Length: 530
Image (tube, rainbow, N blue to C red; front, side, top):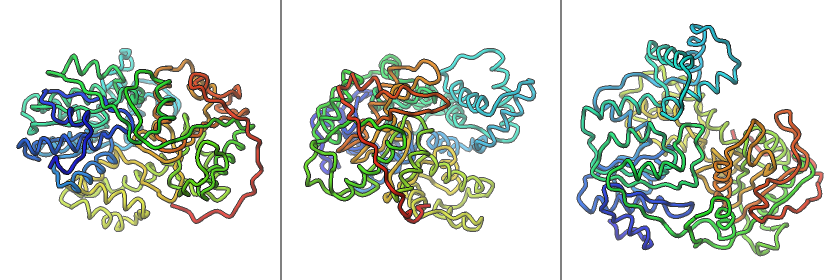
């Protein structure tokens, strides 16, 4: 099986590790998927049965891609997200305790808890409190006695309704594993840097013969969701048995020009680019609208095969499709104005977080149906009976998830917890940097790369180290061309910004060229993607 995979020497050394815990540092474009499949092939060749190998991911997209690639190579294993794996384990043992709580269920439970404690809060404060509850369950937040009382009442409110929230399946499965042995001899983890203490406790409770843990500490950007952060890698070396570390040395996706910028942001990046030539440029526009117009004109030029900005890229560059572009922003509030301008001039766009939420809302009514005995392929039929219609991109996304689950009920639960935006190959992706991790595009625009926004400082002091990692993630989504754009005039959250490019630009050595604003007439909009 190994003969069907070509690995570089660093990947091959890691794949053949005999350590109980193999920890692999793998940066952007270093071939993580190939590495994981190589390890899977190695385990199978070593005689480990496929049903005793568990590959864990943090997203349905990553799990589906790994499963598809494994099947293409004739490889088998249990490939699941953390929460799906915990739920499947409980289900196999006949210990599924509750059904998952929707966001509305969680808000109702919080309302009841606050009422019992005699507290009133704004909608925003309630949202912040729900996020804090997730951090508490992840074991990464110390709280006051008063907050503990609200937390306990919140959990009780869910329990009496037979509901659980995001981390409860993992917590329950971890408790079960303390009494019953895990069926897995080998565990492989993708994107380790996203793990919370709850995830780590579940991992340790599995107690396999070998762990193969793959991640990039510089992509640790989910501290607000309870992820441990870059220090996780030191924790692993102290807390897991017989750890041996490996570094992958080559990036096959990120051009040297972009990788050099990423290195200036985080330092100590042990990667050498093996990708084709790329380019980076900085652009300062007069207003936020002018910035959006500039982005649209740049895209149109590249789609037409003409790089109107480009001394850095040859004139003969191939034309691109709309789905080859992404616009990334630090805060969600910048997305809607960008969408209005781009769609107003006829450019098809997709707001990825809106697409994911739209799918969750379609799935939610199916939770009340008895789907336990139905294959996942029956989900669309059940949806039609409820007068729920999926778009073609949503159907394609669902079909990619069918092999990951055993029943339509499992699929509904997975989507409610972790639905992601279906791919829209005919549209430009607009998304936050946080939601873009794991994605890649030939051309990336980082819009609003300005003082106050990057690093984000409008609501108090920022964690500069995490802000640098966010910029690192944003930059390394680009496979060919990276545009950094800023506006000299912008008001957001009621605050007028300085109009200067991000202070990171000085560190990066990127000069922002002042671009003349262009008035672009509106065009007839293309047909709706949704």
